[in-house]
Image (cartoon, rainbow, N blue to C red; front, side, top):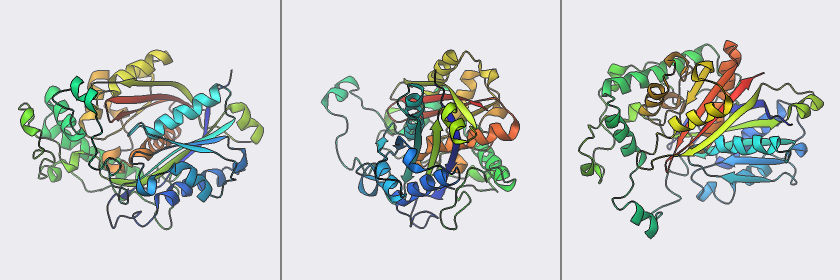
Length: 388
């Protein structure tokens, strides 16, 4: 039976996802093309050998429309014979791309495949693909007559249900920046970051962040029109304990170990287990808990067998609730910082987390890593990898 291994995985450094950000002058096609070029060049791979490129992107409109992954493959100079497709599982889009890629290798449908993702939130703003459209329809409205809510309110509802106070949230957010800054200073990200022009370091990391400094920020969602519906909310989510708008791209080179051996390439890790699940679309962000239980059951591993956890920090309560519900070691949780510091370029975040997880396992000698991502609409992906 085939296995599926990660030969390499790279990312851009983060750019602030607003006008004037470090990557805001870069077209998203060129952003994704940059990591695709770097991935094949640093592994000496003939791109003509790539069977497919599967990319994640959330806001598939404007400059990110019309199958941006295919456009980026052509922009990267790959042969016209290399196909590509773009998937949308919201924030887990490129993690799902990696699942599809690895599962294709396991099934024998692919020999070599690239999973990748991109999001330019400065140039293609979040929700620009929806604009003023009714994205629900009549049948969903009948099922949820009071309506669903944006992720910020979901994060507030999670804080209320799990009784997370503002001080805890801000302390977690400050730790994310401190860990990311320490990893940056030690060169820990150097192996995963590919430059875009002169941009080589994460613009979203603030080395001097403290919980006291974050305490002065005002709640971000208290003025929302649905706020009065939820009297239990105490308004604890701020820009400081949420992930920032971010530009970025990432990509992973995936194949069987037999193919890697034939090409003289050294695999860095292998895919061990996969899971995806749906969850309550009102709370929306809690799917990481059942997805983790599901992937651990499939893997035959316990949470204590895992050496590092990457749980996407869309909002601080997501990894905090995950850690509490799983009884996971907080020292293993996002040990290099998470999206609050490193940014959350939606469609690129799945393979970005994968790059950071592989790097952490290699740096520490850990064997197993777990990655999980909450997703819009109430879903989550979870992946277990094994360092080789």
